[in-house]
Length: 211
Image 1 (tube, rainbow, N blue to C red):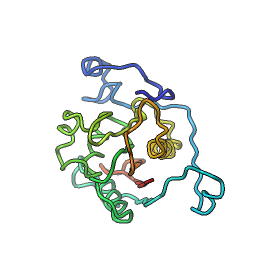
Image 2 (cartoon, rainbow, N blue to C red):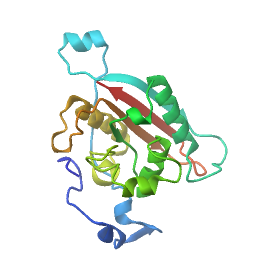
Image 3 (spheres, helix red, strand yellow):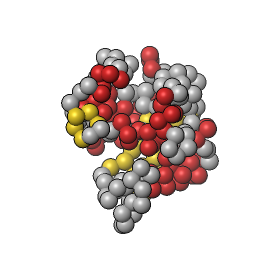
Image 4 (cartoon, helix red, strand yellow):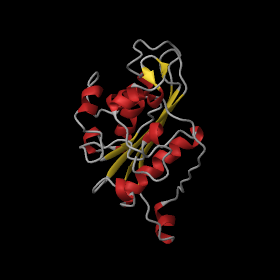
């Protein structure tokens, strides 16, 4: 990651990732996020207060939190809570996947990020792998995701992760992300989730921001 605050900043390749110690087949160590010490903060204010204080504010278009179902997930590679939360956030914000310029998602494991791509509507169900291979989610791609390095590179300070994702999106919307800046970013999405229940997530939150 080009994020100077990331735990892992050195480039790696597919061969090195696959050669790592197996944690839970087929996931090797590099495909499982490291727990990190960290903190993050955001200031939420009215438009009037932000202007009065000269803040370079961005707009919160939607902030949605949903909880998981009380029944087992019918498909463990289609997280219903994730899909539902993303759809609600887009509806409330009045935007769609095509409007998103940059995103941060909860990539606790490599497969998680692929499923989030699909839930966020960046690609069709089952097409997440091809989406990655196309380079669309990479820096400079048509839909850059996790320019911070995500949980897998930046690290996962657990309770601070969701706010760190929002903070990263704000930097891009302000044009303050340095070497990892997404050019002319106007709309950003931060997606976070927690827990697991019978193949689905216990809770999911999606925040849509714009400048």
